[in-house]
Length: 294
Image (tube, rainbow, N blue to C red; front, side):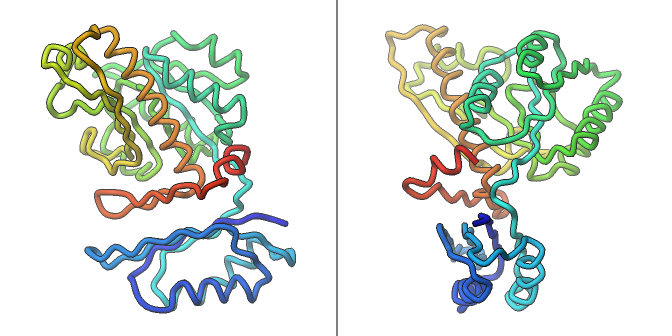
């Protein structure tokens, strides 16, 4: 049986779930997982369904057949082949913990994507990337060549057919144009001390202020630096007995885990944009293992 995923965003009204369920039943499909959220403040309805065709219905058949349902309820909807791996580009600078974590998860099958390229503004991780049989591109970025460098990056995106860019501690600010072109398709990670501790050595600043929680935030990139819709966050506790270097080490662990969870949610179509925030449907109990392996 072929597995599919249906995503729906539309104005909230009666009959949506009934209409979608009836459509799938009429087309010989069995629903295996379903999640929905009705946002009372915005009047929007969000739904994600996993289902399998028991009669051999093709993706094209389902997309064409669902169009009248989508039109009736004013939906933004899509049906995708759940087994198809999304093409991903990772961008990194000189902090490699998130890159190494993503590569490990990808290698063992915990992150079922096709990594089509790694782009960096330094050569530090060329050998690591090439050893994984992944194309590595070093594109130097300066104030003078930034437009040309971004144009080169976007050429790689277009040539590879990349559907998602992951900023694994890529320490260059992307232009407004690039953010708009890849809206909802660039994920970033950073510590959660903003806006309190900006600039260099945020962990040292946090240590000097006696911070008790270290956190990380992963979000979609927008033209507003570090203010895009949040996908995933987490924290870990620290004490007075730990040093600034301990803060850094713990922070790197949290950043790696939070970024991986955000990417995992995105590639399995569990993240919905809802204005300046997101709706993120978690994997159902027992569902993570099947998603992990694709």
